[in-house]
Length: 213
Image 1 (tube, rainbow, N blue to C red):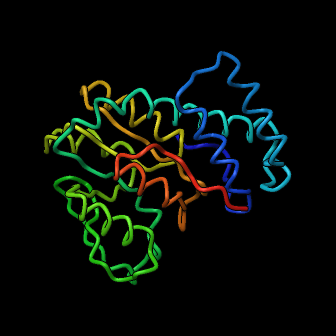
Image 2: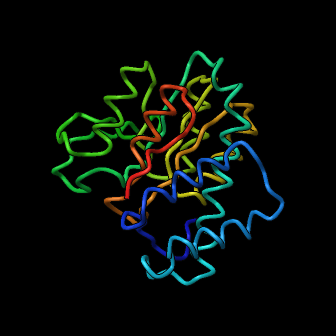
């Protein structure tokens, strides 16, 4: 189930994501307190217009995502056959201007590289160089269908953090290690994620993000 609110973290200092990434190798029992502190320090609620409790939930979920990545990384690194799952809402266009074709067999779009400034174009090009299969999904429920059709021993998924929770449960039930990249802007179209984090994950580096303001 999607969040009941929309968010856009593009106006927040990139240092926030650096701080979140630093927490990936340790799980603190007071994770909610840490999330509240980050929300306060970086004025997340004020800059996004979110309610304070929603901002804390969002940042807490992002911290949890990084921590789960840390746990899965050893198994993921030895995987040979990998896939990247992208949300279709990251496409530049959501109408006929997008030339992606839909594969009903696996309920996924296939990028036809029509717009160089499209996040899906850029992510697909990068993943193909790394020998990943790429699926552009209309929803998280398609994950099981893909993995029942094709065999992968490692998956990278990009989605809203609440969708990532659903996908992670499915992948865990199939004993498939997965790394997650949360959206930094959600919604029904023109969603965004941190491309540097994707590059680090596909290169199997630590999920560190450069400090930029």
